[in-house]
Image (tube, rainbow, N blue to C red; front, side, top):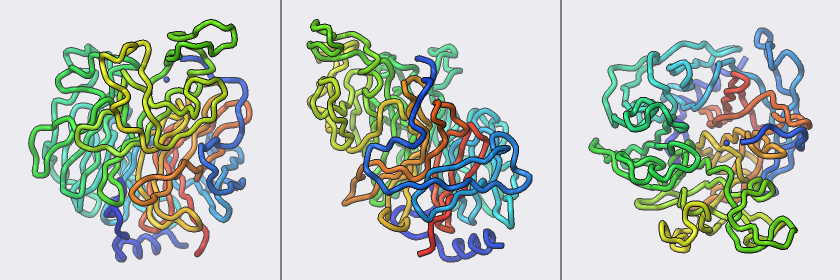
Length: 452
């Protein structure tokens, strides 16, 4: 989602310009939660650091001091205020685009001394969300379509339709009932365009037989053509990006209120709990996939769920998030007739249940032990006790795959579960800083790594 070509450094001219410009889903929140992020992997050690707030930007929630958790040596500042900031992408000339679905526009942030200049690049759109560049062409995903715009020096030309008629709340068959209308977009190395199409709801089996099929990632061939299903069973693949080797990855919001699938006792009363919705089981199941998508791949929803239990179904089992198999959903696929879960490829990587991953991008050569890897904006849970904290997560790129989750930025959730911010997306800038959008705080943060 960054303007960088996957696997290659940003253009030297752009990086130099930036350096000059920057110099000079069903219960209420819990009452307690750990103050620090809860990554699934060991990660790098985190330290508390003050969030630097420039004069004039110190209004709520920045009207009081805020501390964030970062790797030692990193600093974080409030770079811009952008109400309801969602997904982001860098332009070829070193400006940051931020989508705002609620406002129907795309904001252009031009770096300079101090706060960046903010202008509106596009307005009057229908819930614009995903943004991606291929050369000087900007792709914008609205709720019902994807368009391509020629971009030059902070302006865009007339749009070219890439995909239209995508399902949203206005679709005749949905009659306003669409929980995941926001779309994301990515462009492959061959010019193919990938579009996420979320499910109608938590468990809506009819999505798999709809036309166009929902809970999918669609592919538009290079040069244009009809969108076709690339991957299915992707409940809400809001995170969508192309990896360093040209592979397509999705970070997925998985289902809520999963029933216990095993014919055994889980709550200690001695009787079988199969088919029961148990809070303790729901809290950690199913995991949120971070999956490599290939033509025809099926991520199982709503018939199969990726299982993090090292000892399947055993209360208190250690939780493992890499290379995880699927288990039948006892509410929708009890006998396996709908989908053979054992035949599905294991999920490459994942996050804790209800993490709510949103934006996904790939970063290059972060300092220290980090290196190359994926950045995921984790929004945090709405239906887990204790709540899963918001954070920016990092997954190291290793031999064509992703290693375990590490926290890059946290501290948005207080000890009592209250939150002052919720990251949506993190993108590496041409100056090698990491820029983070936050729709709850209405902010864009700038994370500066330590000098090498």
